[in-house]
Amino acid sequence: MYACRTISNWNSVRGLAAMADNTKTTQHPSLIRRLLAVFYDALLLLALFFVTTAVMMNFNDGKAIQPGQTLFWLHKLILIIISFLFYGWFWTHGGQTLGMKSWKMQLTQDNGQTVTWPVALVRFGTAMLSWAAFGLGFMWSLFDSRSRTWHDIASGSALRDLRDDS
Image (cartoon, rainbow, N blue to C red):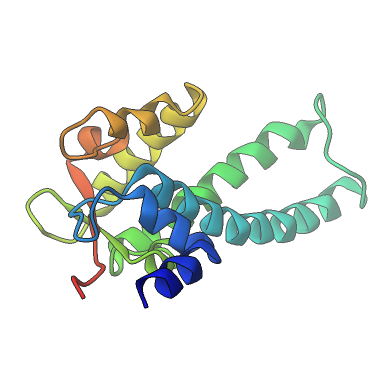
């Protein structure tokens, strides 16, 4: 019975992520689960970016927006704003993006309250810095006793593992 359950776990990405967690009742999600949730959300953001770019191309005679053009920096700024609004909305309305919901995680402030827009802004900005530093801000969770990333620490928020103990 145990061997069959182990084999079925290996057959799914979730099984691999669960095995990466040291225990089944981890209070904070592992780095792998965080990154898998980010990947899910990135797919949704990519779709939003396609739509946004298609709309913006209409203001450029239907041509691609390229460096050196007036719309280039405006386009980049709009993509960043859309990213913030995407994450900010989900974080402030239930604490879960689709990726976080799929991987059974929830974002709350350290005091247990729902994340506010100012907290979301600090978290988003610091997460961007974490990525800009080649993911070092995310890898920080491997050394922190509470598995916190830079953006968790800076914003006073944390991801909670919502998996049940069964």
